[in-house]
Structures are given as structure tokens and as C-alpha cells.
Image 1 (cartoon, rainbow, N blue to C red):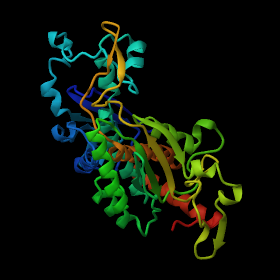
Image 2 (cartoon, rainbow, N blue to C red):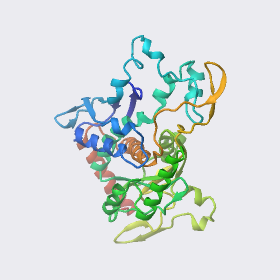
Image 3 (cartoon, rainbow, N blue to C red):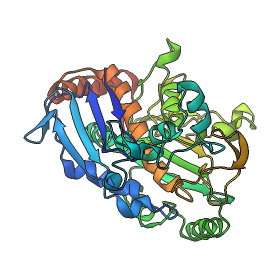
Length: 395
């Protein structure tokens, strides 16, 4: 089974990732991985950390001569800020460990609950691992998962739908429009393809910065070209929307997720929700709408898959909220850690990585194979079956 695990702390020496179950023979370069890491570091509203780090993955194993070997893939992303934290974050016992200790948990963060769970009197042991810095590992791993999907003509996209109270109308994406769509998204400082609303989102972030506030928002991520039958209705844990929702919800600060138009669909009658099924000899079986987000009954239905994630504001505020100093048991303002004002644009890149992982895992479970050529053969057989027996043709 395809799986991955990450390790490392925000100000530790490095982030480390191991991927297991990746088929042999997939071409991948460090440049392709680092391109995704660069995308994660962009976005209006990012904090000072992005001026320090220039993330790059050092691939250690599992790739030889530009191809995956079938063995575990491991890579490391060094933290450049480590040089300023060596004594504080030392592995061996160090007097410097008492510096920058944290005793005033931030409301909305893992600080207090993690300290209670693991008995960490210095909450830095919590926040260092709970930090969204860990998502750099996810994005690097996601670059490999998305490369697998692209090999089978599946394309990932994302867009920011809202920041704070500023909302744009989400733009639909298909294979014809995806390249122009991506160009507009990547040229926006907040990853919103609507230029007018993009400017208003930038202003909202600037206003929040001046007020010592932080902002959340909503982003959409999706995959084009997914064949029907990925996932299953036969078991709860195999349902595709359950898998993708769990992965999106695992991103720090994400508090709600919807598959397709899940929220608005709840207010409409069934005749205005369900996507009618049509047929003609040229296109085969198809839909004219996609309110279900490409998933019905726990399985992909052949339409583009899309989900929306709703992100709360970053817990660190430069005008902090009230908390309790657990070293002296007195009410005080919460600690301030260097932080973003708004990380929704960056989170959309993490969303791409998590959806890529979920789809790649479910795709391999369906098609099977230990090397790319075998998977290609299996998939071609499945595609032929879908057209011959069920008149499904990818458009």
C-alpha cells in the first residue's frame, strides 16, 4: 500500500520524509519536487520565515538514474533557520533549551492540549511539531504522487475562493481551460483567478496585518481526468470522499471540508442537486453538471473531482489573546511566535498534495502493479472495458 510518514520540527535540523509503495520506473527529478516547494512558499500574507527558508529536497534513496526503484523513497528538507536555534533545539541536553521556552499557550493552537497529553511543561515541544512547517514535507511528497497521476493523464488544480470576508465566484475547470486557468491562478498573489477579487483579498490581508489580526478563508482543489470506479461503496473506510476528506482535514487549521457543492446542496431539492446522466454516440455516457464533485456512493464517477477546504485564521496574533502562564499560573497574553498573517494560498498547495496522495493511493488499489509498465497495461485494459461495456470515454 502507498503510504508516507514525516518527521522533524519547525526549527530543528531538517524535515525528513519516507514514502513506501511507490511503483518502480516512474521518472522524477529533484527539480520537479522543488518546484512544488517553491509554490508553497509564495502567497501574500506569508510571514518572515519565508524570507529565511529556500526549501529544497535532498533525495536520499528510492530514486536512481532519474527513476523510482520500487524501494522506499526518502528525502530531507533542511531548515536554514536551524543555525539560529541550535542550542534551543539541540538533541543532546543543553542549557540553551531553556531559552525561548513556551508557557503561555495560544488559543486555537495545539499548545495546551499537546502539553497536557504528553506532559510537556515547555510547550515548545508541542508547537515545534504541530507547526505547519511540516507541510513542506507533504508538498514534496505530493510532487511525487502527482507525477504518478500525471503519467495517467490526471491533472491537479487549486484556487483560492475566499480570504476573510472577501469571496470570489469559484471558476469551473476542464481540460480545455485548465492551462489558462493555471496561468491566472499562479499570477495572482493570493492564487485567485479573479483579478478584481484577488486585489480585494490582498487589501484584506494588509488591513489584518495593520490590525495585528490573522485571516482564514477557503480554497478548492480538484483533479481532472479521474476514471470512474476509484474508491468503493462496499466499506466505510474505502469510500473515496471519506479518504479525501480526512486528508484535507489533516492540514493544520482546516476546520471544514465539502465534496463538490456539499454545503449548498444541503439547501436545495434533489432535482436541483443530482447530476443527470446523458448519452450520445460520440461522447458516450456523460453529465452536464458536476455538483457531486465527481464522487457518488464512495466512488469516482468519471467527472472532475473537486473539494473545498475552509481554513480558520492562524492562531498566532501579533495582538495576542488572553491565555494562562502555566509556569506561574497567572492570566497573561498568549505567546507570539513568528507567523503568517494569512496562509490560505499556501494551504491550497498543501491541499493539492494531500488530494494527490489520496487519489494515487486509491488509483493503485484499483489498478494495481509494481512497476509503471504493468500499471499502464492494467489501466489500458480497464479503460477499454469502460468504453466497450459502459460507453465511458474520457473527454
